[in-house]
Length: 195
Image 1 (cartoon, helix red, strand yellow):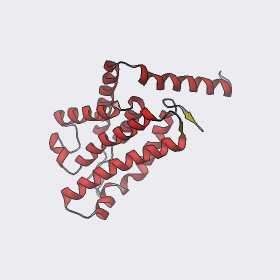
Image 2 (cartoon, one colour):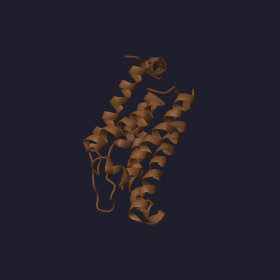
Image 3 (cartoon, helix red, strand yellow):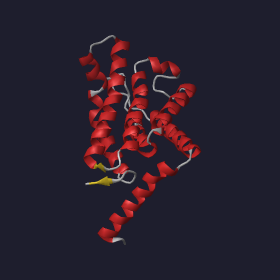
Image 4 (cartoon, one colour):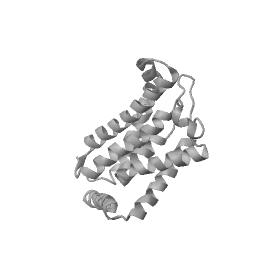
């Protein structure tokens, strides 16, 4: 219907409109969308896959964390703080209520806030993106989640860093790389991307 040039124009217009939304949105609109992302993160936390070789479950949360930062910029971190409040209050975390923050998976939850803050700040400041810069920025954000997650895992279990990485990061690299690819695909409609 659009042809190659028409599709590109349409996609660029949609990306421009969505990217501009963040700048034009009111505080109430941003907080409302942040709450929506908090709820989406909570939903993603309920789908858990436990495997015998790690105490950390597989979930879809990383994808939502990345997208919250891309859509909301700095408010992505606020959405993750809201998620911590909702998850702690209603026991949605893999390890239960607020005690999960001091348990084996608590570092990952804190890492969600840090990763969303990092990526959200980049989204606010950077005016032009390539697929490579989006991929690198998201990979660093996921690395921050691993850093906080593995750090707390090491402290709680009393193990060394290499064992912590083997338990809390290495099993997730492939799945999180796929989440980054999915997030980049969605970000292509939300950020001013160029090749």
